[in-house]
Length: 331
Ligand code: CDV
Image 1 (cartoon, rainbow, N blue to C red):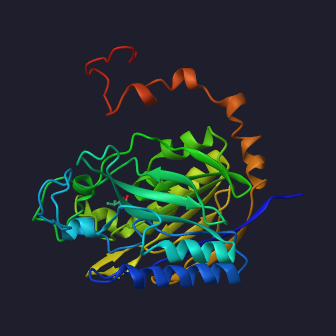
Image 2 (image 1 turned 180 degrees about the vertical axis):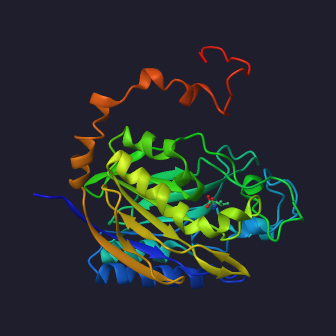
């Protein structure tokens, strides 16, 4: 008996800088209801799905690692609780409909209550009964820390978010093994492999990818190609479904990639968004299809050679031959 999971990828169009959370949550609820009408078990929302993509602005409001008292514009983009007053209705509707979801948002947490806060680019996984069953904090944080006025727009994720040290956990949920990653994480093969080594069957990935890449504009025309390239490779090489969901369109004058896609363990795209706005695409995902890859070409237990992959975890940057040898790594 195949294990079918009906999955929706809920692409979002732009969210304006002054758009209220309540309005955004109504858009999410509308997509969730479309998912329910289409028979979805799970709806995947994008990265930072509750607000505009605020890292595009330098918000000069003091040290981002401390709460200074009043809520600044920067702080207004973060959630201090989940669900919170403005997101509770999404959880309630999910429970009422019996449809789970994953949701990306900016998390502000003060674990020890001593005034030191942490800021993560977080995604949560919510089961069909409305309970949170998984949390992922973005591992690979792209962009820059300092204001760089030469850019047409900023990408200050490295100023506004910490790198997570929690890695890539997977969760037994939705009758399968599922995991999450966020935007830039999708470009790194380690993301998929770490979850592949935990038997992942479905990876949910939200993204905000500007079409203009200031450090190397020759990559602009390839944004869509690279997006699908990495997710299709990650799916195939690990025998897993991948659901990539954009916040696309022109937001505050900056165009971001749409092209949300649901990708099978074969690496094939089985559903793709055709607009750059709010749009739900769906697919019936046979989780048992994963086995056809996990137990043949990508039978890790039989074919992997971890003893010759030591560099993957021993070393961070590339060292060309002739460069200084690192302890424990043989050139
Ligand atoms: N939100 C992101 O992580 N965006 C990056 C951009 C900066 C390249 C991405 O990898 O799509």
